[in-house]
Amino acid sequence: MALTTLDPKTALVVIDLQNAVVALPGTPYSTADVVARSVELANAFRKHQLPVILVRVDTTPGDSLPGRTERPRPSGGTIPPGAADIVDELAGHPEDIVVVKRNWGAFYGTDLDLHLRRRGITQLVFTGVATSIGVESSARAAYEHGYHVTLATDAMTDLNPDAHHNSLDWIFPRLGESGTTAEVLELLAKTHA
Image 1 (cartoon, rainbow, N blue to C red):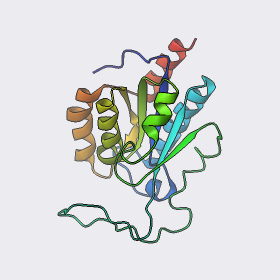
Image 2 (image 1 turned 120 degrees about the vertical axis):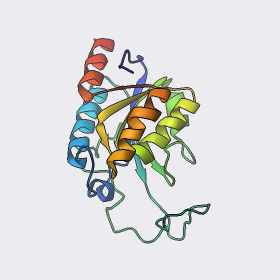
Image 3 (image 1 turned 60 degrees about the vertical axis):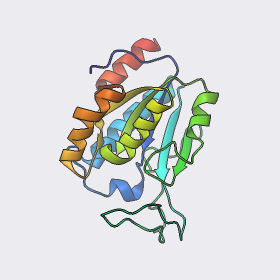
Image 4 (image 1 turned 180 degrees about the vertical axis):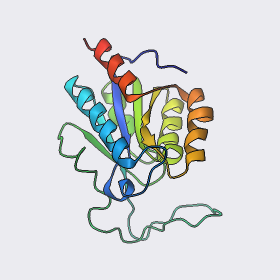
């Protein structure tokens, strides 16, 4: 679906652009490209005095995720210093909201929805890593919470190209609208001219 509009009360939600995550290889876009496009969007949102939400994942030593899986998962061990920190290119803006999640999605077990509702936000633009995990989980929850969902498709990447394309081709069209960073920026400028 083509990107048609941005609500006057739209927030940018940046998923997991933290040191340990951006050190991973991305596909089809490099994590460096995703960071650069997310920075461009964040600067535009800040310019228009719209919220920028920086979501990072962190664990507490001894945490264990519930349920059985076929693939091994990290088990809340010791994280190297700085690994869970938001990348320098995005960090350091006191007006930004930082949300710490302990699961894939940014809504479950966090105060993200509270931050958004208090500000009257009706639409969310998502960027980040990984498309099929943190971004998709958060976008699904946003849709379920009644937000208009927009996905900046060239400002997200995955570890697996098939998973990335599955999200873009099959899941995201059912959750909202997708567009490039340039398209989001163009609509943002029109909405807040």
